[in-house]
Length: 412
RNA sequence: GUGAGUUUAGCUCAGUUGGUUAGAGCGCCAGAUUGUGGUUCUGGAGGUCGUGGGUUCGAGACCCACACCUCACCCCA
Image (cartoon, rainbow, N blue to C red; front, top):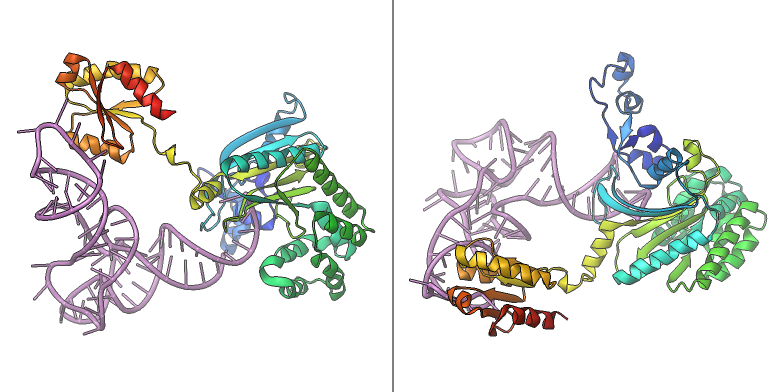
């Protein structure tokens, strides 16, 4: 939970609408004057009745934390953090009102090495999960440069929102939308070479250099992207990396690199996103500290893993062996055995009550427990336990040590 | 925030122009098989038909309001 004042204005206009606001406790209407209330303008009333909100992401609270603890922190400061965040959205496929973000940030360093390290982390994680991904890369400075060149510097948001749709609605509709958003025909005409940009990353950068030659900030952005690409190559990054000028990201606080990761084999939206923010801590009174970070969406990654059937089959099998419960005497005897089995590193459980054999066996079957040990009166007398291998139905009469050996054999 | 759809058994769903006791498959429980699971057979339990109101002799079905869930747009992880 954060103060609303901390949250508001950091995520763009759209983001502000998606903040969950918390009603003040107590008599929350007592400070609202009647006129305001009667005017029924929810925006005006809101500032009186709500001063707290649920966190929208982990980056802004992190920036606040860094400022608060600036004297205890050694910079550059690296941290990861996994926590839920909330968005007052209508939920739908791949979109949740509450979801977990896994954030990785480095704050207090301008070096583009940090961007590269984050790319390596992304590569590492998705490779290990077995998800094919495409990393899309852009830079806010390039977007600012584009706006500057076409003479519409103050329309950055309108421009990016429109060109972001290029893939979806096509060139003509984008131009139409730009016009509707109030851009001059001249500006739109100047934008065309950028929308037509093709080729690989290097070719795009070359053409961009020409187009943005008159924009200092634009050239700076190109330079940053080039550096990141070079560093990524040098560090052996082996994952698809695409310069995508239509990648905008609505979060207001980004100033440099913008990163978004998409799963190639599913329709899921972005499963990771982030970028560089030069002055997020400045808002809380600590200027001049630049940070960069990315955030992984846990649920979406889970959804992708499920859709692509990438969860290993053995994630569901926990228990290796079930000891059937024959009664009080037998179960006491089993408690000693189970201790030995567990000490050997095998996860075992004793059925907690004396139920019918059929029920206990079905339980083992349902849970896909590979072995069952039966200890009744005979077994207690001879010390030879009945070990049953569920898959084949074979049964063995073995001492406890040999049971353990046998279970371990197959486990390897 | 805008728009659309759904809601009937634990789950997935059927239910005709409004008509008697609301069905199926799967699952669950029990038995066939009192120390042996997956297959099969037999039997059984389980439903305020999302909520509230209305029309009607009669509503799961028609009308209204609300709620919930799902999906799309917007935006995003």
